[in-house]
Image (cartoon, rainbow, N blue to C red; front, side):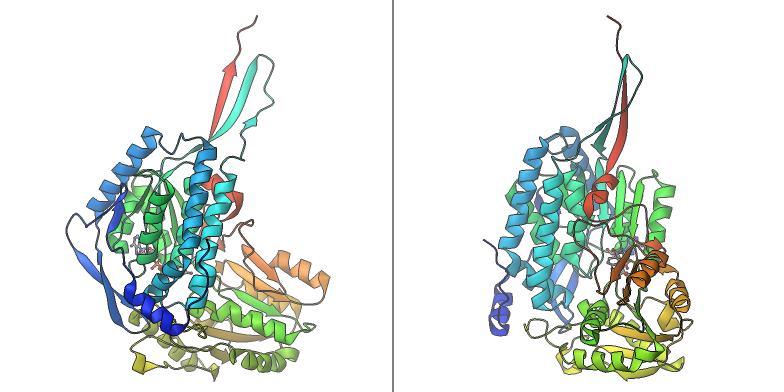
Length: 504
Ligand code: NAD
């Protein structure tokens, strides 16, 4: 049974009081304290109040988890399981995630400050969809037979890599985990995953549901703790074959170093962005465009790698678009994330709030003009709330147009000619996503091809769905893609088996 009904605020608050949170690392099929016995506090960003103490793992916990993962892999309990059975197990897991979506969504909301309508209505269903989609592929991907000379048989087979490490961010804790776990587990690997230290709670419960679904002990391990200890230990571990990282470009670079200085493990990087949204002069439906522009930058408080943080708009339609955007923002209430009416919840932490406010101050100093927002609000809550903030008069060389703010801050930049729009859009060190709005098919096709970004949405803010790959150009990514069958490839080795047949 699916439990994606969004609770009312009173019901949600009562349910939070009844939550039983899992707060230890999950290793070899059981919850465990950190080897060193340390714990740290995780807080609710909407109130600034502590929620729970979490096991603070370190390199020694990573060692234990990797040993368990390797043992399970070598024993073949998962890696050599009939792919059809692996598929059924993962599909059962997806079903359990859906059946517990309400509980998981509540956990995600109090831990990450995300609106309950998103966590229960979107994040958890999408998490289940991702796992189910990759599970379905587990017994549908074939090897190849090469056109080898007579008297020989050459097959090309795909094998799981072994132990996959994953290190993920705090903005979509459950979904980012699923983007790694779905394909890595479907292809037969064992996994050691580290959630962001601010948002470990949902993944711990999801891992527990994995055991209930029948994933054998040791195949899925979650080690909680800080990035510079647990994350680095995963990056440097000599017995991890591949590491999938989603997070900032700065930390992503370190994973290349970790790999280079350890066992040359495969490194898959999904990193930051500064994505453009281009609105051409012939764009027609301003209500639709404004809704998509707002979604692109204000969804998830702008804490979104593919956030469309630069609105590059033709001079002739800028005023109309900004009016439509202002009207649209009336439909984006900021408030208690447990309230189903809320569309913008709290930023993840005090530190991140200060970083976003500092960027808003930089924008003002650089001469851009705040059209709306621009200040912290709802201070009495104790939480970290910033309303949708729009800067007009931005030039692409300003810091607010170049650096990833990862908050609800939109920079509006004007252009005159198509080539200028493309030049501004591509003038960024990042290349994750882009969108463009036009009624002209020629412009749509031409510009979509000219944009240096991994995902381009035309007349919509869209990352595609589970069938399409997600990954970036330039500083936005390296080494592989999440989602689609491309994600399966990155967690497998390609092996050639060449056989010489004896003559009759
Ligand atoms: P982050 O890079 O600070 O942290 C990501 C993860 O790395 C966390 O688990 C963290 O604990 C760990 N980490 C931190 N320091 C580490 C170190 N020295 N060694 C090893 N691990 C370390 O990023 P964040 O603040 O959690 O997330 C925001 C960033 O993630 C943004 O840049 C955003 O664009 C990016 N992101 C990208 C995608 C994508 O698919 N491209 C998706 C979501 C988020």
